[in-house]
Image (cartoon, rainbow, N blue to C red; front, side, top):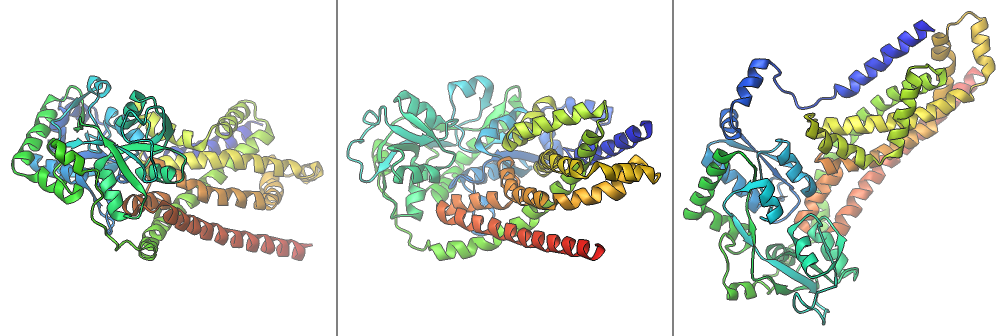
Length: 514
């Protein structure tokens, strides 16, 4: 029994080391370096390292998106690059979902956020803000067939779609609107056109960019707020020197015309200043029609970037996570079948937690939650850890059921032949259990391919995130999601063929042995 416990403990330690060793944020842990770094302000650290880390979404056109050459660009992105140039440092971007941006600023993963963050009383109490670099005018957008909403007061009590953590949610609450949650402007418009909502709230700039790309979309601006949202850069409090440096850069860009030029280039008008009443009224008009946007060209142009993301991230992420998960599953199953007193309750608890909580919640806890306690894990390793633990929990039950299905007489026969417990497991029980488990394990494997799309929520550039980026540029969610869905179907079909071949091979082998 002691030998069995020692062996199982050793294997468990190796599995834990594999999972935890997937990598977090590497840091120089020497006491002298920690002390030296702690004595520097954030601005001094930026200058010393020569890198300014900026958080942005990467899926919010025309402010932060990927162009046709798949380069990150947009008004906010280019402003960030210009600030870095003024400060004399290189700019690195961290692509983060809107809901996670401020959290990453809180834990120090990013130094600045440039992603159309409006200045509010709540945010002002928690962060320092730079000088405004943009004035955004919230627009009330309706369907062209609408005949009852012509002003903000008319929209009181109506149903609107928007991001609940944005400034627009506060405007909707002021007019007692019923909010339908959405995370992108294109989704808002799809809901509006489908008749599921009566209106939506977003910036006039996003509206103009959308109708220029899709001029046949039956939407219109019913009204515009006279007071603009002040868009500025949030910075952790207590970093006055960084705030001053950013402000100096913004003032210089206003004076030398850089902000005006970038605004004209990406937004079609100079929004780096407040507009006159006549200019605001002109925003209600649709821009020039661009008929170059063809569905076929969108599909063909996006095919390789999506497939490339699948080959670079989706497939490796699936293979690595599944392999580690299976090792963990075998270990947990053996421990539970063996009923090792110390480890069995731990394994039961692990399986209970992993099967009882959503995979998305687990990803968010590891990626967004752990940094709150000082544990920062990069996106890809975080995904591997969570997916491996999930596969291990579900597959352990598959293996446990398969092991228990082996007739008890085979255990007794092995013992009578002088075989040890581990020899019986390795030579007699596990080979049979593995064969029994093949269909269920392939089912988990195929499910994992699809589950990897959740890694997009923590900025892993797999197929679904690349699709979201292209959707943000083309405003064609239906076409793009059908295309990526087809690619997932191809990958899963290939795995189904592999499963069929493996099952046929194992059956043939069994027939020959018999």
